[in-house]
Amino acid sequence: MNAPDVADHTGPSLPPVRAVIEPMPEDIRSVQPGGGVCYQIELAWGRLRRCYLKTLRKGYVGRMAALRMGSTEGAPHLILDPRDLKFCRNQCTCRWDAADDPFQWRDRLPFARWGLAELELMGVPLLVFTGLVAYYFWYLAWMPAIPLGLVVWFFRDPPRKVPGAPGLVVSPADGKVAEITRLAHDEFIGGPAVRIGIFLSIFNVHLNRVPVACRVVALRYSRGEFLNALNPESALRNENMWIGIEEDDAPHRRMVVRPIAGAIARRIVCQLRPGDVLGRGEKFGMIKLGSRTELIVPDGEGLRVEVSVGQRVKAGSTVMASYPAE
Image (tube, rainbow, N blue to C red; front, side, top):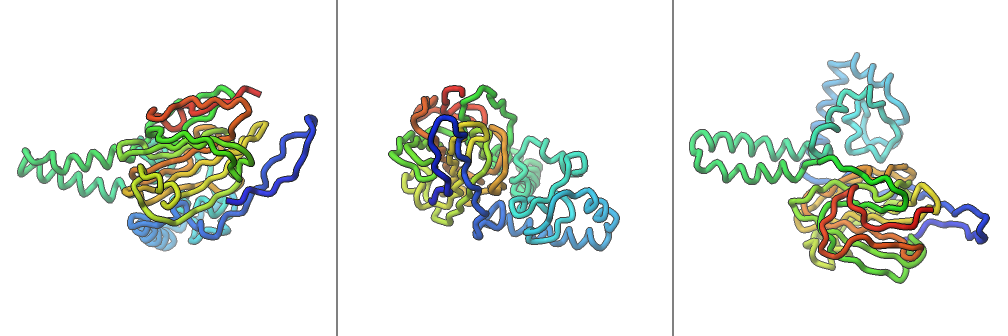
């Protein structure tokens, strides 16, 4: 990874140097750059829906266009309403106010919005099958009911209480701490660092959250293999999304969050684009099925690692590390 260019300044009176925002890489053309079967089905459905809206709902299309803010430049298809932004939110700047978004209610569902299509495509057939089996062979209904329950459980999105005290770094993922390693030097951070690896089983919540209030500096997407996330080689060889962030408040520490695909998890979702500003604990994406997430933070500066290997953590609420309040 190449660290963004920064100027060298010394002296206590000078403000901390901010990182240079890098452009979006050419290989990130979607919030789910790895594609997938459900992804292709959703894109095909979107094309049919937009054709229907342009033909039979011209008044609705006109109203949504009048309420739309920002630019659609960079979007791979027409943006007629907020549903069209699901997979290209990181490619353009257009948006709607929450009050003007007729689909805002989907964010209030207890399920990950990025997984609603999978929930329907896998959950509805399983629900129908469970009902049929229960009607004709009630004693066998548990067989399809178990995978149905797993699908619903996997895509859940429970509320989280994000701690507000200064200097805290919260977990970017649910799961179990699998690794705490001190690094002599991290190129993006620009010095010694601590890497904390989190293993996510298929039973964990799979939404990712930012560890600190920050702005996004750079993104790197790497296609790769799908080794088991417990295999140390998975961190190097599996599909992953490297996200370089910088604290919004002084001293503007740089950190890295890296969701990594696993043997079952094949799709990483990341809706961020360079320059985005987010609050601590804010959701930015998910990994679909069991996987691994890494957090890299600067060492020194009074860093205290607040977790241990084997400890279970929750995204947005578990404090992973802390620094002295400025």
